[in-house]
Amino acid sequence: MAKKKTAKKRTNGAAVKKKPAPKKKSPKQKSIEISKKVRINRSFPDGQQVIFSNHFVVQHHGPDLYLMFFHTSPPLLLGSPEEIKDQVSNLESVESECVARVVVSRERMPAIIAALQETYDKYKDKPSSINEIDLNQVSPPESVING
Image (cartoon, rainbow, N blue to C red):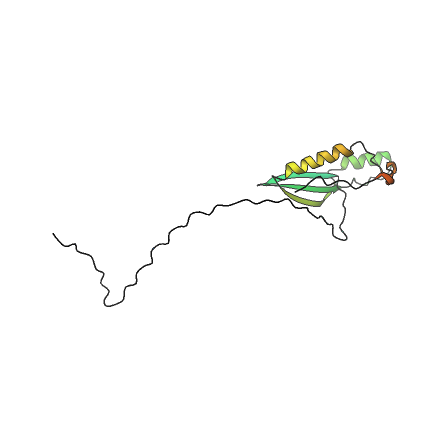
């Protein structure tokens, strides 16, 4: 029987280092999902401004929705009825200042819409003027968005 020839590396007298054996890949770790509902303590910083908005725009960019709230003031029109009519006919635009810009994930938008609709349905037939409200019967609104 013939002897098998094994190839030897020539090292010119230098020590040959063996390469370490490749590491065995560990099995993929399973991810687990843990969830727990906790109360959210909402706070408003001292000096938090409340700003009136009478105009808004909703846009989307990628997975997010941008809610932009504006305050639009009517132009000051002075003079006789004819002068006011001329001012209105020459009016090309009015300024609208962005007072808040809020970014919301697409996943949260249905909850916001539901909260707005629920609140609107509860309060749409209530008095709209402070003169019509009995302050002894006013209670703070319930929080409708949880999560």
